[in-house]
Length: 339
Length: 291
Image (cartoon, rainbow over all chains, first blue to last red; front, side):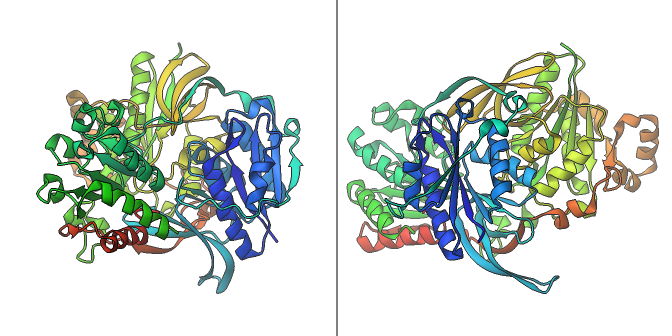
């Protein structure tokens, strides 16, 4: 039976969150297919890395350990992944929709001449009847993703040019350990037999990676607080909600001026202009200077004790109530209902 | 520094960022016909980066290339007004329905018709599909390195470029030999405006199929000023294998589409009760807004 394969991202000896999410989802797909789950991980000083991967129910792990493989560069990773995938011929290959996955996966799809669906949020297995061939294709990957500015969900399939590949959005799939004692077969990749000097022509001169880097512009979900939040401590609840939803925390100018939140998170005319999929405005009255920076959000939820707050006129949902009550309830009910 | 040959890949896209009330059908789904078309925003950033290199290195030539329906010639003219030297239109009904793999094959066949190139540029992604795949797929087919998410070109010599990349959690500075392919991030400088002088110069720039529909004045102008004619290439012009283009060259197919109903109505007013908040959270999850 052909396998489900996951490309794992690793930095500083740690398997990325998104890769753990993919392994969990990959296991579910593999179980439905009755197929093995395989993973590949490329980096430097990876001794013992399988300890972080096996537990997701991975049957076989390809490890390429070489100091030239970290940090990630396109050409060597692509050369090794192509080699492994040609050898294993999996049915499905998954990547994170990250800076790395979105750089690597299309290069591989071109090299393998196969289909790739970007930025999926739902993965499933199903059949498809091709009218032209009068033939039913069984057990295909359903790669489902928002498209057209989020106004439609499209189910993308690929029945004739395998593997079927997809990148998956971060923070959408749930991380679930399958079996802490699961044993994987480890395959050490002979890096030198695959890569050549040509694969290292692109050189990294400088690199600054900050885990805490604020990226409001790219955030699909923003939880923003205003003066009404009341204190820096209360902002921590907003942070908890934002983290849970895979979003970022922002603030109005009044909240920044009051010192509740850092300046680099300010949204509005004098801060950042954002267009997230969902904007949650907590204790923000909605002065023009703020709304100018967020009115293009696809959906807006306003939480305010003042029913007359100007921001309510922009909102899709208005929750009248106390933030101290509403935010913890949103966290609770999200945890209870998230799939 | 020798002059460079730069090709900028551009795309005309529906303006998915401005889905206004008139672009919605009564059932709340998007009416594509009512959406304006625009120059893909990231591609304008790529054009600016190319024009900036032209400012820095005398003699550099910037060629824009687009694959699309005939009306996409609008963005070629727009590019000429802003400072591009040439434009190439790749248009043929048989290219229609292409996914990113078939699109990259087609673009690469066209790029290979050019006498030479040093840098291929394009926007990081297009707002209609947000895939960010065509750039890397072209780079693989051309056999050149790719530098994705470029925010700034720090320096360039005869055979090497140093660029700053914008990653989701930071920045990275890399050097790459030429030729290479770059995809340009929206964090790079915005594109310069149209120049009045260039608008005058190029306002009658037309593709061959447009010329045929125009009057004698335009036809005469084109025989006098050949630079106004935008080359238009079809399947035979780029020697494309018909099994690798359009719908038949596309491994990915859309099985089904589910419309997300957009709420243009009045806000729903909720209390802070458990019931109200749980129902709202469930609705957001069901509509794929969260979770």
